[in-house]
Image 1 (cartoon, rainbow, N blue to C red):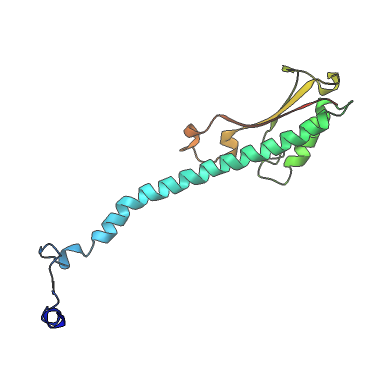
Image 2 (image 1 turned 180 degrees about the vertical axis):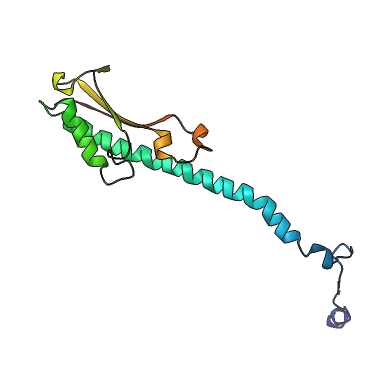
Length: 160
């Protein structure tokens, strides 16, 4: 049985594909460059879009954290809305959403209606919303259509 195997010779394809078709190497010299030029636009466009959406997600997380800190300040008795706004500004300073560079809108709601945080009674639900326009966070106009006009963070707690 081993003698039978030794008689088999390896198949040499030369300039032929496994299907027996002739391959000319001279014809494909620029094909890789042309294929890259056609596919790279799509690849880099998708990568750029992922980058822009990532910026939106980072902004949303920063605003949610700032709204949480503002809401934690608002549930303490005697805290006003201006104190909540300054707490949120302090939380966002030093980030990409620095209030000195980006206009951050802060809204305080007591039991679902906009009111000063100082008017809340014990047990009232206080909701703090921090929002920013998406075109201030995301510089590209291309993918702005896929994101909401406002990026916001919302947090809600009960007054102590």
